[in-house]
Length: 365
View 1 (cartoon, rainbow, N blue to C red):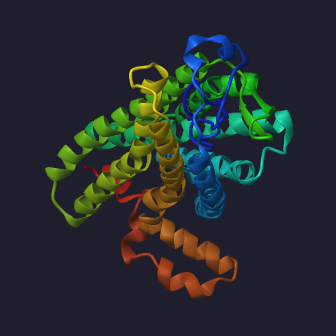
View 2: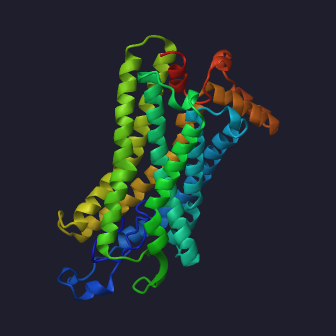
View 3: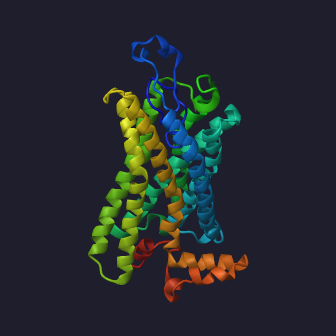
């Protein structure tokens, strides 16, 4: 998020621009809060110019490649998808759509927003829709595995397929609702102080603070609490079991929740500090705000790395997936990669395409 009331609120989508560019609302010019000169953010501007375009470009490439591979494998047999596999397909699509917006923000960081207000609204809404979708779908996967392993209830696996479809529709509908502020208030506007055009929200500071709080609670804290609750109970069950497959399942469970927490917690802690500054709970300080802007740029990049990790965490750890990827690569003429993706002999007996956690839950744990 951008800093506080002495600067121009340049839309960072809370995650992507994290812009340290100065802002200034016309109505603020006469208010007591803004009587002091605006902070200089030359350092954070220079850092963003060097860091963001490179970071977004790399994440675009690897995120599109990894999630595209997951989607390609899953879509080879769409009729055979389990509930977890369906969530993983939607997760891969959400991650792909999110990283597809990154080149636009890379251009803005390197130069300015050159795509007009229409694409500003669409790209901003699309980014946030898929950010929320990623978090919610991870929570759905956690809850599905919790039911399978802890309660031996396979809601999405043996119930009507409409259950998982309806869940996905609700998730995407909720994400679209949460992105309405972007569709309504985002626009490409010229910032005279920087002599550049940026894509940002056209509403008062209080609206930006409210969005920060909403994204922190709904897009991070709530899904994280669901995952922590579900995976804690899953671990308790797995620790009480024996066998190598259960141990592998436990490693995957720990990796899943730790990866989400490590990737997104630093950014949202920075956003929490930004919220406290906006609410005047933390005193304003130009040097502190400049360091905070740099921290948000770095930690947002770390958060986007999670989009590239999802294929590894939810797919490439699955033995059956490696076998399916091997066949896909062979059809594409990439036979030299078969050794890297060769499945173990037992992979044909595994019920899920994806992870040892799902395998354990479906094998009577």
